[in-house]
Amino acid sequence: MEVKDSDKDFTFSIEGKEYTISEKDKIGENNATEISKKQTLHVPSLTIGAIISGICIAIVVFGIGDLSESSSPLIEKQLVEKQLVEEQVKPTQITTEIFFENGSPILGNPDAEITLVEFGDYQCHFCNVYFHNTEHEIYEKYVMTGKVNVIFKDYTIIGQDSVWAAHGAHCASEQGKFWEYHNTLYNNWGGENNGWASSENISRFAEEIGLNMDEFVECNVDKRYEQKITASNADAQKLGITGTPAFYVISANSQQVQTIFGAQPYEVFEKIFNSMREN
Image (spheres, helix red, strand yellow):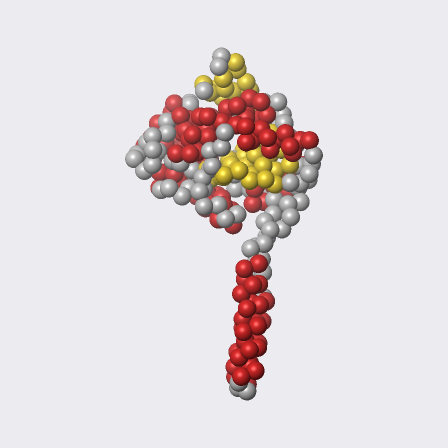
């Protein structure tokens, strides 16, 4: 996949045909609300409190049994206090921000009816498989046609090189070349923790795509996006993601969210996209 970039336009060619997508500014605190409104998403609150509630019920039931055999007011007081503590545990809620914040600039039409959110690690083998085997077809048939837009979020779980690679991509975003740098990283993929994504190579990749090196180096030295990467990792953990890549397909019309785990073939994404567009 050959890639070119000019300002906010992301241009690439597939099998001799050239395509251009406008790269929108990254979602930040000032425009997260606006994008959420455009998507009109109201993702239902998800809970992981069922197990906790079950534990609480078990404590109360068995505790009552104990009370029937004992007249100790101390035991009764301890059981009541335990029940109150358990009842105060609140379930984890999943909101739209967990998908739309702390990620890349939007690739494609920001008003597309479907958003594809990928949590990935640039050193991940299966992320690389998805990039080379599936991603380009999704871009050609759905992103280029304005039906789907894409957000990439970091889940740097393999090693320090993963963090350097992710940080380099965000620094490239300051110069309007996040997605070009993103592609360059995967096109240079060489395994896990073997140096291909070292800090030295991160700078070399920036030179290859024509970034202003003074600005790029300053951005990396300042660790400007360290907190953003950490926040994205936290978002992945809240969703219970245990590996990469992990995808969330979000419909702006039906407010439906579907998950895809692993480097699935194009047909899996196609089926979900078409189903969402029909509903």
